[in-house]
Image (cartoon, rainbow, N blue to C red; front, top):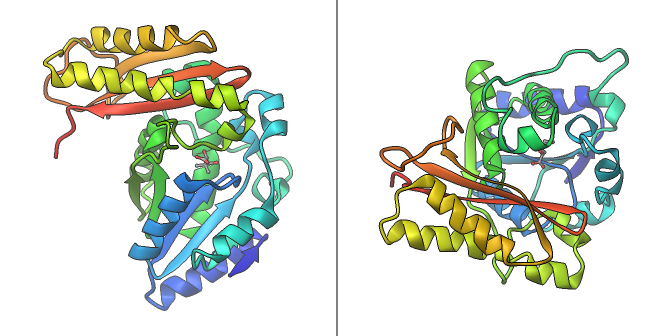
Length: 284
Ligand code: PAF
């Protein structure tokens, strides 16, 4: 395993690998690796000849400076974990390697980025779309792996991959959960032990909605209300949003009919903001 810091070197290595007719699997991360990331890496390892993991805490996607400053960073610990997963390369550039002097070109994905996380974190998806475009352009992966926990991010990246014509297949892996059901996230480490325990209410609320759906409830607002009420019963939780939207377009819906529906939640515990979701009416 080699750690690459320079974009140019990453690009030429990746080009060489593709010339050898080997498939490149890419797992973009911001480090602070947990089992959610590792499940993506395991899948990449199974599907691809060469696995590249990027570790880059992307300043452009944080709209709160405090959140950016507090984001956990430990490249040595992350590299030690990745060494056990037969990762071939870690791409860990400095910020100026990605955002050079006078950087002024951003990628903006219309329609999908104003709601949900986009409404609560203005500019967030512009930052994500821009960095993912730069990373895809550098690495040109055959497959790129993302977690379902970040459902809106997945929709945005699928859109930009199609629109910008990247020859990359987006692979979406299921959300990995702690024993309590709390979705794995690098932010969980910032919760107190009590908050971490109580934050499981987010998953419980989504499960309640799923049970109601299975029981025949097709009114999307009522399902969202079940989620809201369950979380509101937890005094440590402060809801940011609960929304029921079309899983592909992210447009709000009233009734569940043909298409898969995403129920998405964001809630704060202390000063840690957590997100989670489920998809109902999935086509098998
Ligand atoms: O999901 C993340 O960790 C980040 O948003 C990503 C995709 C690595 C872009 O910085």
